[in-house]
Image (tube, rainbow, N blue to C red; front, side, top):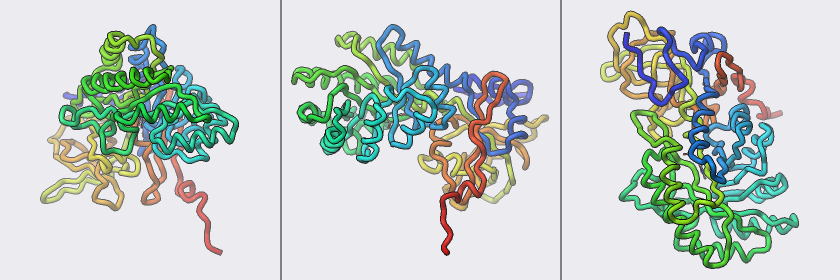
Length: 427
Ligand SMILES: *Cc1c(COP(=O)(O)O)cnc(C)c1O
């Protein structure tokens, strides 16, 4: 029989008629741990990381995993043990790095709205660098550092303003979004940073967007950033490192992003050609390290045929898998153990139990399913659990990390009591 293809997921496969995560049968995990259930492949994470490591072989480069993509402690441990630093966006994420045994000296702190308390926390911990996103933040950070008798290591996030007409899908590296400082203002703002006693300028950074599937925007952004590096260093301010951010896409639905090593072959060639090949490099990949390392297993609760639409109602919902509701994003949905013999498929909207019309996981999907069947929502390793909520007082799902033939529970399923811990009754 014809089994569904699993593009982008080399560590998940059908063996016989059953979906496996590495060497573990998924239906057995679902029977043991219940659904909805996130299953991650450690080998998939490490092979995604290895593509970057190959790309940077022989270079002075630091990979800082952008942990907002998936900040579960055991996932952080996998990357910490593989020598990664972390790109964080909150004081809470810093505490997660510490709890997972990560190297705080390899932490970079991004984000447009750092509080003074978060700055103090990060300075006291000794993080590697603050990626500062505005002039006002520079002044506040300098003051906070001076009050602690310190100098804060800073890099300024510049906005390369890569031409939207050429690359209309890029969402964070354009004028008119809240991230970074404008290209035209960068040299002036660097001069200001260098004049502040509480700061030590160490680098420059950019991050142009997410789910980028082409090389050209990266090449364009690199040119723009290197122009600034030259101008800033002409002004007498040395930049020890250049950070090119994250953003590399994954295959959700016939997407064809470059491999990380192929991308960096081209980028490093440009860097060499422009004379910056020996500079310390940093990158902040998130999605591309974990997105296709995870799936979410869910059970079909009801089939609900309708005049205009058939609905396949599953036990996972927008609180577990927020990307379709938030961005109309696509996740492939495949049967965990396809029915044999295959009856005719029907076209369904796959929806969750949450009381919102936005609670859909997939639209117009041809499936051959019955109530009680399990489905795998693919590409669920990034921006799913880390964005999960307790809406409708649904406890967050359990998570497993598979390593070869061993599956380890890395997050227990939340109970209802877990979801209202910390709430106080009136007297
Ligand atoms: C989100 C984010 C990243 C990671 O983006 P991905 O698309 O997941 O690779 C990197 N850097 C910054 C500053 C971010 O905000």
